[in-house]
Length: 347
Image (cartoon, rainbow, N blue to C red; front, side):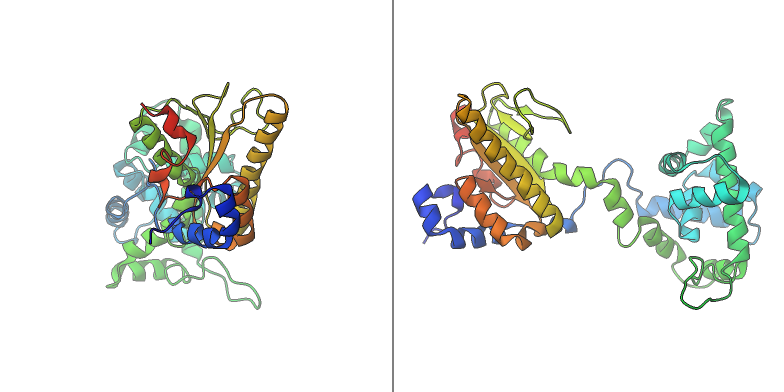
């Protein structure tokens, strides 16, 4: 027997088989958290390892760790700054705060994030040193390096009851002795620092590309629309459309007289899923108001994915009924053009 999806049933069948359709839709959801967009700023291990080896070589295995040695390493590879931050085990804003409080540096969190991002370009620091207008940035970097060396040489203070110092790590707990031991002994220290640089298994990178994660399904929709020759209007982030209190992600063929609107959502936690379900429901409510105002009826379609929606079974039931079954996941996206009114616009 052919397995039916909610978008293949009429309203009467949908009401009779709603529990089955909720289960079917939830089963189609994928755990998108296992895959992340690379984005433009991802640092691959081989690049991080190159920077680590330069830092290690220029400082004599961290025996001569001073401002001059670190500067020399930075001129060869700017990512050395990322290596130094990973040894500290701090975020860029936290590092900037140390420089501000200890050395009265004027660096703020925004500047620290920008420097941290720019240092992924190996030539960033050397280019700064050849420009006469980069004095402020170079001074800020010097302050970050200076405060980092101060704390690394000092190591973690004596253990206190009820608190844990951020430097109480095997490679920094006893100051330079710990760091030299980590670099000297037969352990994959560069691998450890790289994992720390990424943050709790890619968390730092995930935060950096969080907006791109949501665009994965939007890009898949756009690809299918283009390949089918469908006229459509894709809205920008936070864009306002005349006549729409809440703008959908896609209007087909346009926002002036839409036949179909599409909202695309991916989420990995149930709290966010609740908010995104509410947004999709609002689009259906908005459509009904438009009809009451004399505008043409149009189809509201949801394209969703991610494990967060699995935890919202009651919401999923309501959503399926309110959208007349027009809910698609990454696994069923190929049916988007044939199971909705979009088929009337395919050329």
